[in-house]
Length: 460
Ligand SMILES: Cc1ncc(COP(=O)(O)O)c(C=O)c1O
Image 1 (spheres, rainbow, N blue to C red):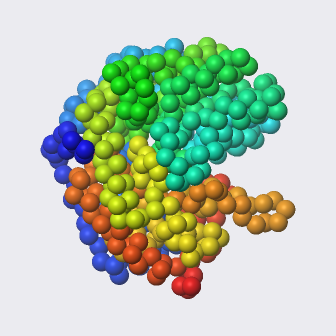
Image 2: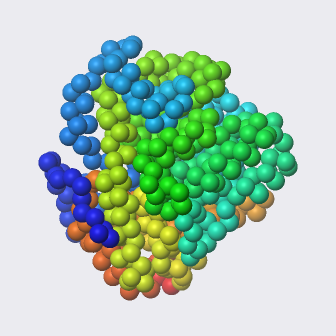
Image 3: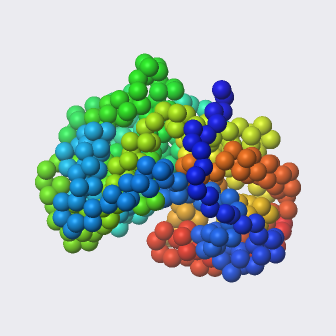
């Protein structure tokens, strides 16, 4: 079956509300045309993020009731650690309340000003956490990743030539570790192949540089390996995951994605000294090492979610649901990033709105139009999120891609709701000329996309 139906049935429902266009117009004005500032209950289909938005299973909800809230040595911690070690294999597992805390703990312990961290593409919080230590975040993904039309099976791969050139140029001692993000969220949710991971590891080993995975969407990446990489067709996804993580020295993990929970994360490490220093810091900023900023019940839900996410019927449905949306849009001629990613479909705003210049934030304008017309919320991944000001001229340096990400929460929306999204966007595309650009009226010094405010410009 090309698009398998849901491998679950619905036991609890959460009503969603339709709003009028006038109401949405007012909410947009009040939010300064930033969808992060719009109340969620006024959104009809919320594709802002797949992070922390999963529907938990009955087994996970049951697990919450088995929460052991002891300050130290909760039984859920031992269950959680056993599950994580059986998949990821790292010696030290440090629970955190979400992914960016795992990043912050690792980076604040290991990075020094002037150091460098190569990655295929850093996610926004990862980049910000590197830069917060006055270190440099380097994106070294293969160049095809920036071509929205280039269809490669593993478009998240690291560019090994650039990686080696970077190590030689900057010196091995200024690079305490390198990262690979699976799947590559900021580059379109594209997977990284096992072959590329193996070769990256070999290269780094020659220079004595550890490899840390950003493993948020590891199960989706491993499913793509099974689907697309010769030699893995018959391998169970869990074994693919075990092999993949065996090439790393640790991972940061936001379990809000492939942990199928609403909150939670962890850091996995083999390095004894880093783990010890980080554990001391954890006690200062998160909590005792056997709960790390979470309740015992959260650890239980996370342990169960990490097992469920490797169910291949679930993964087949998950990847197909995202592909279903992408293929409907593609068939209607809507410009999207290809191939379709694992957790989201990315609209190519430069081609959707060619009449809006880059300094009028076309991708942000597209998120505004989608909400105003249909109550659908997506997120800008373009100049607002990744644009930089040139220190000398004050002018904006634009990223290569202007995208709107439509991230699909896991196990939340039915395919009828996905059809509604596809039909709405296809209709909007037919009357795209009516969409106007924006001007930014407020920006924070860091991670500005969360709080920026805009005004609408008159139509061109
Ligand atoms: C690739 C990647 N890394 C890290 C993070 C940060 O995780 P969290 O939101 O749990 O802090 C995210 C969140 O979306 C992500 O997509």
